[in-house]
Length: 101
Image 1 (cartoon, rainbow, N blue to C red):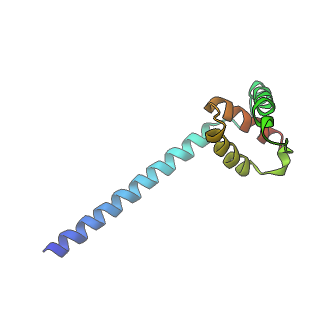
Image 2 (cartoon, one colour):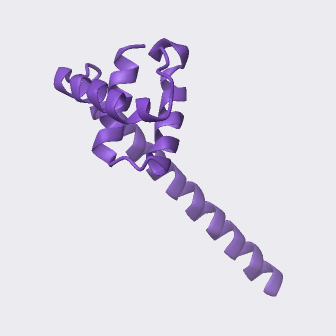
Image 3 (cartoon, rainbow, N blue to C red):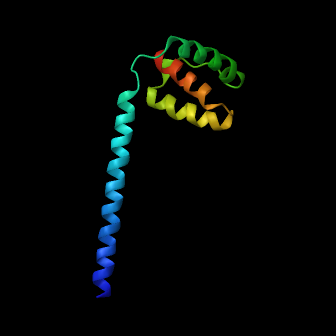
């Protein structure tokens, strides 16, 4: 009887985990679909200024084409914690770098 309860609990846990993963995936897909594919020119300008003001303090400027959009996501997110950069500034920098790619 205990084995049956253990198996039922394990199945229930796995089912709940799968449903949660599917719901999170659907929510992420829906959120991504609503994001505009054309960047805001003002955000690009703010990002260029923030990149110049912040990143150039410690780094040689890199050509934005040197890294892919995914690489820039990782790099900017990493540097956001080290710099520290406000979230809006990091988003502006990412938008600038991706638009310049």
